[in-house]
Image (cartoon, rainbow, N blue to C red; front, side, top):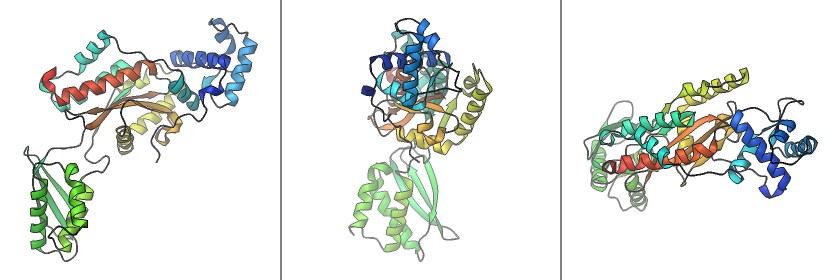
Length: 360
């Protein structure tokens, strides 16, 4: 499934000054009211110095380009998902948050002693309340350094890997046991991993361990090599593993519904939010680059029915490693100019609270 946002294939340079002005007016009005925009309404808005007939002709040209659509012939026009993408990429003016807005977000998220779970839940609540959509937070996977690894043979061709972290956290993971594996192979595999993983995270050591085994530098039999290789492949570097998705503010998506079609879209969106594995995969993709990512409507298969938009940004730990993401999901007529800087600042704040809680 292609989850990365798709930039509009139509360059902004193909629109002349009149088309840009009319297009901007329609999109801004639609984002403000949620209603299709007619030529007479746009003419009365002022600033265009165009007759309704001239506006209608320009609107027809924009519709032919795939940037505008209408529910029926006599209705006004509204931007398509491609049109919204073009507007966001090329015409949207994004300001910075005011000092008061930053203080408001900080007041809602800051938690005693920077407890990670509390911070993440408050961040999701804050984004929901401030942005008017549902708040999304992708919690980080467990990334502590390890102390010890041990393999235990079970019945039915399975082994139990007992992974002990330096902070005392313990995880037990089932994995296939290679045929003919002897107890001595399990012991050697555990000792080998314990020696190389001690004080390091799984992700940090994974490539080095697999390369050493592939090069034949590990003094291990084939069963132990197979056990370690399959374990390292399964335990680290797998998107969505051990990740949790925090969603707050679903009820806000029911506010200001104007038609039965709006209710049907929101119901579809609720169904999308229940598909947590796919939502986690979407937010994982947003972690691959710096800055805010925007996913608009049908350009993402996950939202093909609900026609929703997601604005998301990654957050970092104290070592500047990307460990999770925060965002807002709602109808495609989100107030992008307000939501984008809000999500960006919230991501920075969450990272600082989790990485250096004493700063706040």
